[in-house]
Amino acid sequence: MDLQNYYYGLSSDRLLFRKLVHNDIESWTDFYENNPNLKYLSIDLNRTNYEMAQAWIEAQLERYRKNEFGQLAMISKETGALIGTSGFSLYKFKGEFFLHSMSSVKPLYWRQGYSFEGGTCLYNFFFQNNLTDKIIAFSHIKNHASQKNLEKLGFKKQEQLYIKHRQVFFYVLTQESWENKQSIE
Image (tube, rainbow, N blue to C red; front, top):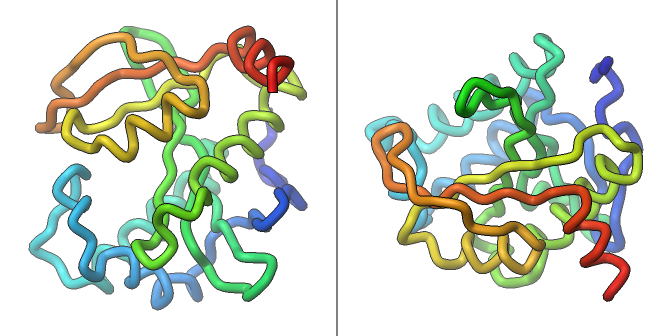
């Protein structure tokens, strides 16, 4: 699949999605400010907030260049603010490539449903266009908010694993379970 126009024009009730750009680095430093959940991520916390934001944005830009998906900016329709990122990476797991779902929201916007709304929009796009039949996700075993959101989205916990120096739960969302969930709501 050609991902050069990945999610072009995709939006939800409160969010617009677009590719991240270098100009987002300064704004993304807010994600690292007073964020107690950073310990759940496999990132080098010995860097400045700017260095971590720059590394994150650069990693997404590299994924775009390689046609490997990447996180997208979630922009508030109301204010134009960058409130988080959501999207996918290609992830090789047990010898197979999967779409790995990831989402990050700045602490200022926590508990307002943005991660759920962003995930719902992206999963609808992928499943309605038959672009995949399965999406995977990982959540640190102590990150209960992440687990709750994944389960609310319809992911099913499969097993506990040790990946990238951390204990995580492995989750799966199938197209069939997503469609069944949508037909009930």
